[in-house]
Length: 216
Image (cartoon, rainbow, N blue to C red):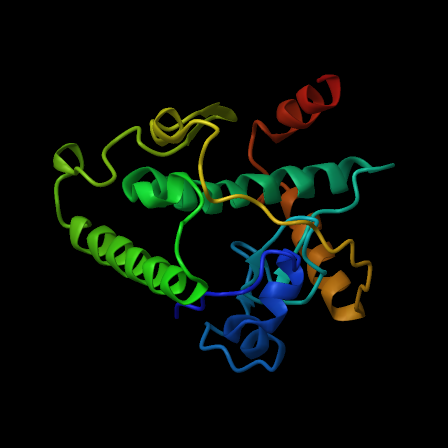
C-alpha cells in the first residue's frame, strides 16, 4: 500500500492518522498477522509500528517514553525502539541516495509530486524484491555496507550517508506532542519494556549503550 500526499504543515502523527494505513490500523482492518507470543515467553503482543515522539501512543504504534526522569527499564525500551527506527531511516536513506530527485525539494505541482513519489517507491520495492536472489557481493542497488549495521552495539554507518550528506530532500515534520495514552497501549508498551530487560529478551550490549548515552 502506497499512500502519498499531505500538506507539510501537518505533523507526522496527523498525517499518519489521516492516511489509509492509519485509518485501517485504528479500525483494526489492516491485513497484518494476529498478535503472537514474544519469543521464548507466554506474553502475547500485537505487531506494531515504530514511531518517535511525533506520534501518539497506540496499541499498534509504539513511541518512546518522554526523556525526563527515566528509570532503567524505560531507558532500555527507548534504546531498543531507537534501534528499530534505524531501519526506517535506512529505507529513506536508500531511496534518497538512489533516486536523486529526493536530494532536494521537488519542483513540481502537488499532483505531479505525488506521482513522482509513487513511481519511485514502486520502483524501489520492485528492485529490492528482484535483487533478493542476487548474490550479496553482486548486488548493485543495495550492496554490502550500503546500509547501517550494528556490531555488538557499535553503529557502522552505511555508505548511503556519504552520498546524500545533509542535503537530502526528505526531511522530518514537526511533532504533535500528543499525550493521550490509552490503557491497552500502555499495557502493550510495558510488555515490550519488561521483555527487553528480561534474560531472554535483552541484548548483551544494551546496558553499555544506555550508560554511554547518559554520558554524552
